[in-house]
Image (cartoon, protein in one colour):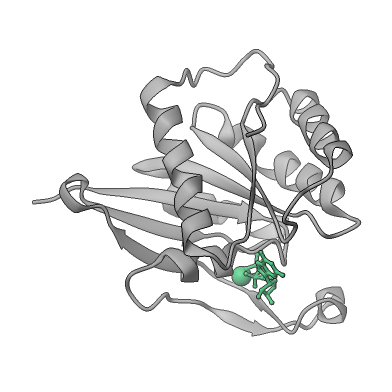
Length: 189
Ligand SMILES: Nc1nc2c(ncn2[C@@H]2O[C@H](COP(=O)(O)OP(=O)(O)OP(=O)(O)O)[C@@H](O)[C@H]2O)c(=O)[nH]1
Ligand SMILES: [Mg+2]
């Protein structure tokens, strides 16, 4: 039987989790978007209330199961659903938003413990060339949370960008150290 691995996408509402999984999945992704009812309704029409789910064939390496967690911190417990067999995590940031850094801060505040010990990356989405200042503020934030991860810019709608994300994750898996107690400078490609 071929193996399967899990990858989880987390990030603030609107960061692009559902979009990423739709771009990557080779099955029809399962999404549980509903109309927004709270303050979010001012910013977007729908939000994910349970898991997003997709799958990707990795050939001989098996299948990659893709999970998107709901953006709201109150759904953090859903991480338990995906923890077993988790290969890595992608933290998405809406880099075009004036609240990008605050959004990342709240994601890290919610998930820092889960991210420690995993290979993970920060994907700056919705901005083709995120400004240096934003990248530096993200790196500073990671340090404050005592986390280490590379940052990269993506367009979550483009499959090749999302593929780059997990190529990076696989590199980290091959070469990384995941007892992350120290803070190193995140790299920028
Ligand atoms: N311009 C641009 N729009 C994007 C990009 N990625 C996602 N979007 C749009 O941003 C909106 C929000 O994306 P979603 O994928 O729904 O975000 P989400 O993280 O799943 O949000 P929640 O389910 O509410 O937590 C959608 O309208 C997407 O089409 C991008 O790279 N560039
Ligand atoms: Mg969603």
